[in-house]
Length: 209
Image 1 (spheres, one colour):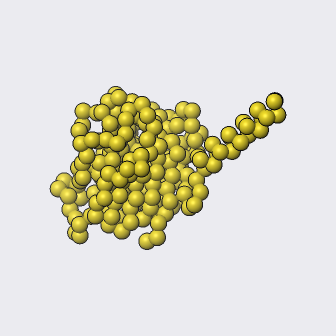
Image 2 (cartoon, helix red, strand yellow):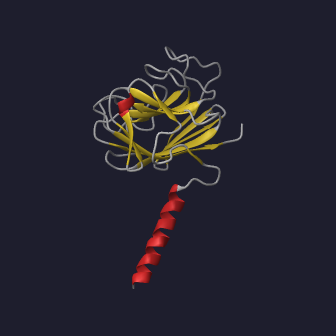
Image 3 (cartoon, one colour):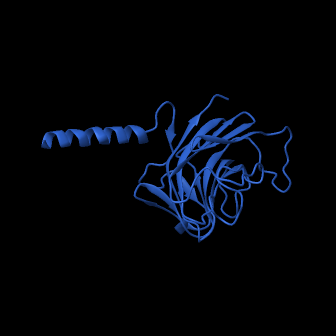
C-alpha cells in the first residue's frame, strides 16, 4: 500500500508539472520564485512573489518584462492565470516599453477588473473596446489569453472570445498617440493600494510575422 501511495504521488506530480511547464513554442516569463527578468516602475513594494504567484498590492506601479536580452514581440499569443480580490483593478499591457512614472504611454491595455468602480470589465481593450460584463469572477482563477497577429487583436477570457478587433489604418486615438500596434514587451499593472491581484503561469508564444 505504501508503494502504491508513493507511485500515485509521483504520477500526480508529473501531471501537475506537465500542466504548468510551457511547450509547443510557449516561453515562460515567470520562474515562479523571483521577479528575475522583470523591472518595476515607481513603487517597489507593489509587487512580490508568494507561493509561486506574483502578488500585486500597493501604490500605483507597473511591472515590465525586460528579460535577459531581447524582450520584444510583434505577433504573439500571451496567456496568464489571474485572480482578483473584490474591488480590484489591474491590467496587462502589450507592445509597451519601460517607463519610470505614470500609466504606460505606449501599447494597448487589456483590462483586469471584475468588480472595481471603473465599469470597464475584464477583457476590455481599455478605452478602445470596453466590456460592461466579465466572464470571470473575483476570488477565482481565470485565464486571460491575448492574440495579436498583424492588425488584429483577439482576447479570450476563460476560453470565451470577448474581443476581436482590427486596428484601423493610420490610427490616432484621441489623447493616446502611443496606443497602436507595433512591437514591444508586456507589463502588469498595480492600479491602487486597495487592489489585490494575483498572476501565475505567465507565458508567450511568438507567431509568424
